Amino acid sequence: MSSLRPSPIAPTVDFDRDGVQHGFLRLPYSRDDSAWGSVMIPICVIRNGKGPTALLSGGNHGDEYEGPLALYDLARTLDPKDVSGTVINVPAMNYPAFRAGTRTSPIDKGNMNRSFPGRPNGTVTEKIADYFQRELLPRADIVFDFHSGGKTLEFVPFCAAHTLPDKALEQKAFDAVAAFAAPFSMRMIEIDAVGMYDTAAEEMGKVFVSTELGGGGTSRAQTVRIARRGILNVLRHAGIVDGAVEKTRTQWLDMPSGDCFSFAEDDGMIETMVDLGEPVERGGVLARIHSVGRTGIAPQEIRAKMSGMLAARHFPGLVKAGDCAAVVAVHV
Image (tube, rainbow, N blue to C red):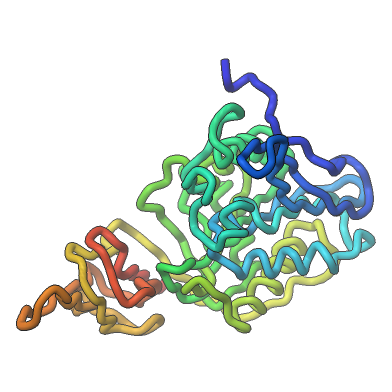
């Protein structure tokens, strides 16, 4: 069976060796310009004796930058003397997408966060997912995967965990969210959880925490500061890095149902009627979609299905039918 095949990925680091190691997850990839080529995914392992293991990742989607900025910096600056346990740091998980600045891989169009559990004999994206599924996730006690809105969405900066059937695991995840101390902390649901890295980790019983920090295919000074401070807070909270958690005020939000999400039903030019962080009333107009094919047509209105706060919005000026136009969250 394919599930029993060894992964083609070869790490150049030793996960059980103390100290700091900077290396690669080397994935053979034969292509026109390199018959025996490889995808070289950067990885840093910082280990100091026994203790919990944190698996950190950014660049799950290649156009999201706060995570990679924070994690490349952490790999350079974290002193193993301050560590009790292991930090496995992969700043750009879907490395081909990260190098291309795209959400999905330019090699196979694979969305890493819809490719789990992966396949050792599948596409490049599936092979990376399989390595995380079978080799890295089992090592971890806590899993932290940075996200932001990429080129098509913009969020208020929040750290998040999912509501789970296992309430003890859920509480551990929300405790880590509180430690991250983003301006907002989210109790999150997913509109499509199949194939997600999140789901793979949670089904293994791992504490899984994520973020949505800004968006628009870039980063801001504020959101990068949030990412850098937050990941150290989580590592301190987990007992892996020495020092006290740096407390700052956070506002808790909830996404209680699918009514949080609003989708465009027409192509056109989107006019945002509510800014991020502003209050929303049920039935209020969140956005208008203007037809651009001809003049004289009234815009289509997207109305809120619940009251709350605008937590996310479509970022580009043009929108297509089916695009997520807005996300409303409620204060806890």
